[in-house]
Amino acid sequence: RITGVLRLLAIAVAFLGILAALAALELERGREFAVMRAQGLTRRQLLRLVAAETGWMGLAAGLFSLPLGALLAALMVHVINRRSFGWSMEIAWTARPFVEAMVLALGAALAAGLIPAWRLGRTDPALALKQECPCAPRVVCLSPCCSSSSRSRRWRSLSSAAPAGRRRSR
Image (cartoon, one colour):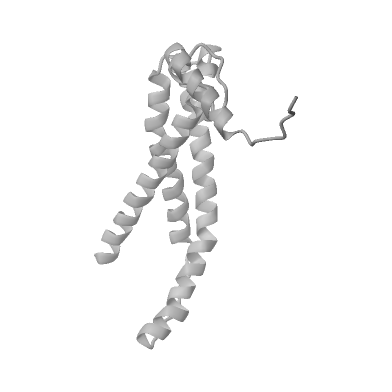
């Protein structure tokens, strides 16, 4: 019973972590997806693209978690239990927990990817391209999306951040 509750808690934490990572990916790649939508990518194709990406990420996470989980289980049973409690036990390796871990990783990634994909599909490409400024900090922006006050601030930050070189005196 306690193990089941701990398993559900671990699943919830993993799901929230994956959801946060995919939401950050959505923010980072929003302009790229908007360009693809403006070039004719449909909502369904965008959903498929994001689902494929999140599916591959979930599969990779599951594959990396299997040996790491087995190593941590062996460490807990053979080292930590022996030092902390003075006893150890045999580990019964079966395929079921490994299959469950793979299904959980893949399912959580796909489920967590649905929310960002849905939001990306509903975003108007023209609005997404217009709202996001492509400029990086400390770069002179000449695009129409930046205001003149923003440009002057950027020029000031560049001139103040520029290293003082040799100056010729006349």
